[in-house]
Length: 185
View 1 (cartoon, one colour):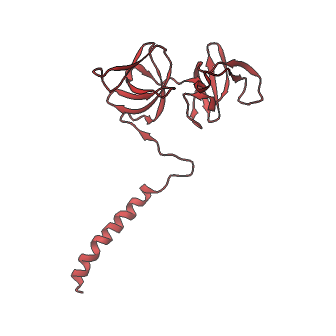
View 2: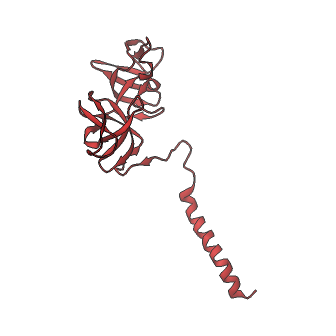
View 3: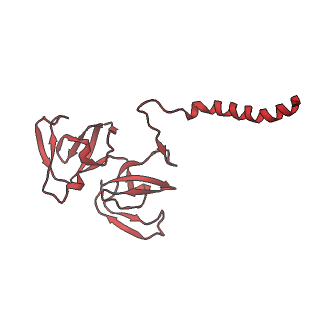
């Protein structure tokens, strides 16, 4: 085979091999424990938790005021999970799984949480502890579905505020924070 024909045959392969080798660092797995965070057009992570900024908020079936109102929320501070962004609209999910669109001006970055809403119909209560420890003194028993302010979380425990009471609650019992998520004061 003439040298020029061999060159034409192997150059594309060599170029592809060089491009693939250059791309390897970008495609390498992230360090152990690190996770890739998806970001929406706003630059903020998706999904993420936010709360309602107002005491009267419409959830619509689409991203715009021309879309029908599916739900009307009447509780300021209610946590919502942002799962998608479109322009100034956020597709959200509530604690019961209802999804729809809310204008970003009606959402706040303030972190709140509902205490074990999945236990709401049962006769149960959730302990609020003095320290982040199952054996710590119980400050109060909190009803499932109670709304509290998330002060901080360490991945296992969250410091919560309910009116004038502040204490620690197992993070697994709060809808409004992700398992293992840390939240800074």
